[in-house]
Amino acid sequence: MSDGKNKTWFITGASRGMGYQIAVAALAAGDNVVATGRSLDALRKVYESDDRLLLLALDVCSQSQAEDCAKQAAARFGGVDVLVNNAGYGQLGVFEEVAPERISAQFETNVFGMMGVTRAILPYMRQQRQGRIFNLSSIGGVIGFEGASAYCAAKFAVEGFSESLAAEVGQFGIGVTIVQPGFFRTDFLDDSSVQYGEQRIGDYEQYSAAVAEAYRSRNHQQAGDPAKLGEALVKLSREENSPLRFAAGSDAVQYLSQAYNVRLSELDNWASLSVSTDLVE
Image (cartoon, rainbow, N blue to C red; front, side, top):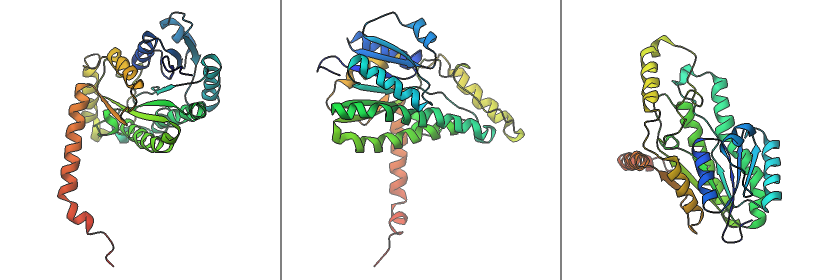
């Protein structure tokens, strides 16, 4: 448990990308890190041995594994101060071309897996009466994008879960921050991570191909720097009043500003009809 200076982090999906860079930033700040991933071998390939580092195999879809890893983390470091729910992947593709089981799998990892790990860690944070949870959402958790209905639906769910959770656990000194990255230069759009719909429908043929190509063209061209995101989260972990939502990246600020302005304008434009639905007594 934190001694007021050093913290213990529990990070999912920490073998590469954002999860790895967040772990590196936390270690550089002198904190303890529990880095988890589906493959222990993959974790061992990217991390050097360190007394402040614990590597654990974790499939976030397994509640029993999540609980066992939380127990090991607490036994090693005395508790968990910061949880980073980062594990996930992108299920892209036009809705009708994505099989139902692929959509279920997207929610199983990106939503239910996040919930399961949070459920495993919260008892330790409640016992400590302090903690910080970073849930990785996306600009796609606020804005719908073409060819990303399943992914955006899952990230919208992350937003609703996280905001509600924050209201429930604040009484125990536990804060929740929803991290909303824009496009970051990770392997997210690589074939090793992202998936596309496989059910081909003639009406969508050209459209679907164009959408997929648009995403592929962004691969490794993104403006976001994962290392700087890691440093930003370390800074936020030390703030007494961290925000409920944190937009990560200049593109995120631009996208979200536009989205919020459009919503406010739409709300105002239809306000008279909206209030007309009240029961008049």
